[in-house]
Image 1: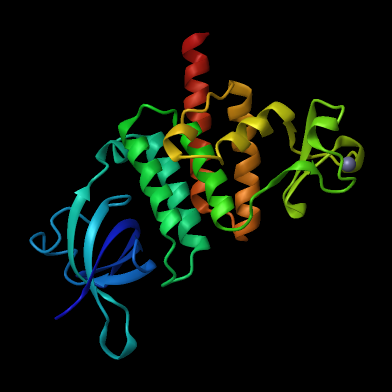
Image 2: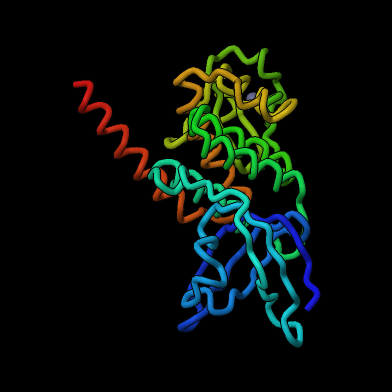
Length: 265
Ligand SMILES: [Zn+2]
């Protein structure tokens, strides 16, 4: 049976009947592809421990009968990224990124840039030299550009005053307008998300040049907090859904912060 060979990252897996799994893969060649992995639950010989979340695989897929779901014929492990799965905060971030991809991508549309980005952030997350928050900022900023939702930080969406001409230190996030508003235009609604101009500059740096360099942008603690708050509202708004894993990510992050505070007290 001739199949197509492609690198792939496992985005999610669900059980199907007593024996099978349905896996959703982000493949380099075909983009998001859901496929049935027959006997994957029972037979350890067929897919020995390879169909785990975030694993980087080399897969062989064949088209199912009568336009049915593609069938996963073979999967070999290129990188298990096991240091992600053994760490709760890394798992929470990787789950969030995977769900963004899962929700945004249509089946069967290749996205080579997004594949390379995803592979890069998972590799770095596994390696552990770059702070997880910085990787999440990098992933979300680049994702927004690739997906065509690049936020406009250049000027207030309403009065068009350029960012460096706005006299306030902070501006207001406005996902529905694709960017930011100056405080005069934003009015005084209660739950506005403020973001300082310094943070916006740091966010913009991650969107330029090669990935290695962008991940080495030094963020101030304020920029990390503000940047994550901004992006975790902006991205869900533009993909049209709030990833369930975002709630989990926030809960895990809060627990870890509370624990750190207690140990410093
Ligand atoms: Zn304005």
